[in-house]
Length: 509
Picture 1 (tube, rainbow, N blue to C red):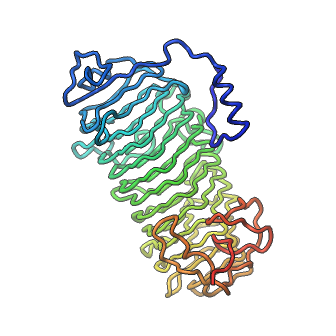
Picture 2: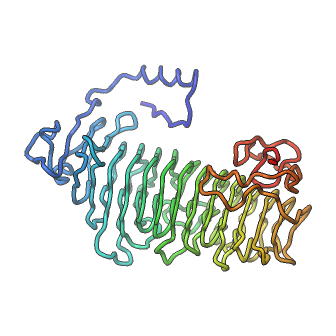
Picture 3: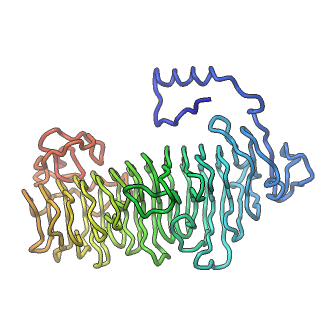
């Protein structure tokens, strides 16, 4: 049977066509599935497990059962099961294995009690995890001791398809400060092995709450990274992770990274909130970023509370055509944007229509830094950066071919430094910038007349970054090709004489 690829929106005739196709496919025998119930407080492993009155009691019983397409595991609300849920058997995209809660009350809890994982999907596919409480706290971990809330691991598997992780609460996971394929954290997908090229297709991580985990909040990693742009990466070839959607999650107090995507091809990371990251790590960490990925899109996200030297966003190594747009970053200890290809090829990043508020750097790091090499083709335009406590607005180490166009930069009253001798600047507005900073072509200096800068509390509370009547940023920008067509606020971008900054609407009196 031909697999139907996930799409973002289906309307009108397209919806009808897909519906008719789905109706035309005959249901296979046995795909209606069996529902099994688990009550870790009052069930019995000698019972049938097929009704609420004959529920099983332990994860041991569940883990000994082979599941089939369309099967459902339901854990009783308000109860807690200790140990690791390691289900056997796979579902399909059309008939996944579903794991969720039944009954009234709080979501059923799976408590890993310090194991490698609380929920461990190992070399299986076609799963939906929904409305569960996941935790995994144990003794202080050794330096390399992995510990995860929800861990999806494929080893020498090929391509694993269809994983939905939705409406989970994942909290209190004290794993090691480990990166790469032994990443600890809240929700982790890992493509491993060494003999069979392995990756994921169709990952949906949506509507989850991930708090107080080490080290990553939500992470996708891979041992199959090697390609021309990453010639020293692990593995013998590149295996993409495709159809990745990470949406509407709330991530907070992560020891390391907030959201990390490795080997993504066209991944979409949107409408997430990351509040507090790099809180316990000794490594460098980022609020939301992609590594060794192509055409990753990060949009409508809010990232705040990163502890220096972590930064909100990052254009990283091995990646091409990463896009950051319509994001709100604020109160990050290091800054708004990091550019760090780490000595390997990366190119074509675009950063546009973002608002950065009070990303200060504690006097050590600027709003934009590039200490790891150049990313050719990087374009940074129509952003509004309000950093009244930043000692440095921009710090570039070595050479850079970045193009910074139509941005508003507001520094500290004492004068923030732009240290960059090689990037190209054009049509930017600067306020409180130190003397001697390179301003480039057609600069505007002075107050951009933002309506109420510094007053935003969330991504949807940013009206203070509109422009008042008389602003030097009104209609003084230069057009940028392929500009996306909309600004941060949803206003259309005019074809000629755009505003400078993230706001393209009319003046506000």
